[in-house]
Image 1 (cartoon, rainbow, N blue to C red):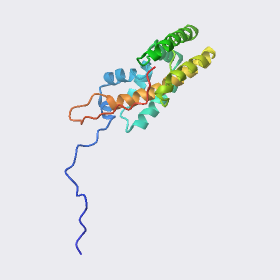
Image 2 (cartoon, rainbow, N blue to C red):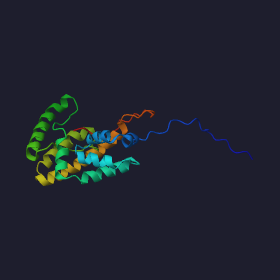
Image 3 (cartoon, one colour):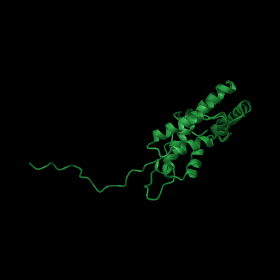
Image 4 (tube, rainbow, N blue to C red):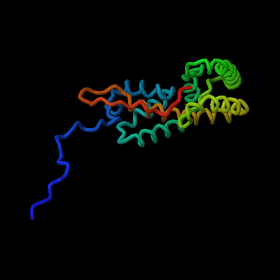
Length: 191
């Protein structure tokens, strides 16, 4: 009896799938540290994450980033918070003009109280709800004492670093010979 003929015979092999971690894993140490420092402004954090390369997959990279974030000293945390933008970034449009004024005032009160920028990760928050979530979080966190707020800010920085790392590995400049990809579905909502 003859062997059955496959319905979809295999075609010529296509390009190998892109390994999103290849550029980070292959980058020279200084370049990797600079790119990682854009994800979290602590140089200690960036050095620690860069030193553990190569990473086999994104989960391993994110686990190492979390570990490095939990290891931040108070000075490292201060450095990371100082690298965060002080002014919130709101979507353009007249609907946000009144909110922008309230948000700037709340940010100024927060910075005056705690001495650093307000940081929050809005991954998973619908864009239409981001502003309300942001303002509510600002109001709530203004009631924290300094030590409690540093712990909350450290956790928000850790979450932001995870989102930024994910974006970094998917948008790192291609190495020669790598296929182009188009991946812009980051869950990060800039604040």
